[in-house]
Length: 201
Image (cartoon, rainbow, N blue to C red; front, side):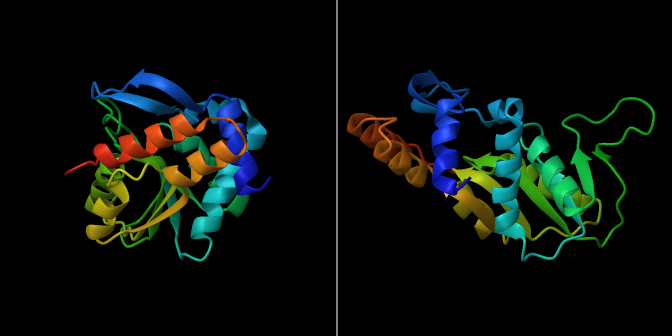
């Protein structure tokens, strides 16, 4: 499946929706992206993982780490398909047993690529970077499926990390307009929303 066809499929399964949605921040948005829906479509999950892999195939790494929770399936498939060990960050530290917050086998000095589903501010990815670096791992690259173009990539890049995005939101809306999944009014509404709601961190 090519990149353009995958965008159309994302829309058709409801992973990208247009309308009026209240976001966690309380802001009303004309677009809602829920990439967790991909896990119910194994063929699409495999495609998403391969698209992410294409972004980082030339990067040298010892480990992969998916940002919880939406990116964990993507990281898992890339790990299995390309035989790269994976580690997993927990959202909350275990209160029992080993009390680990980072699961898997790793050693200080190993290189790790982070995999994320999408960037708005990039804060979740940076939280993961901080945790991995605290454990002595080296992070230079982050792969994401969608850049919402609200300042996250620039913010993370300014911190010294390379961000590899499969899609930008502008590319997605252009393809959906071309394939008549959205109309011109929705297309302009998304562009206006993105321009007006830039993240400042």
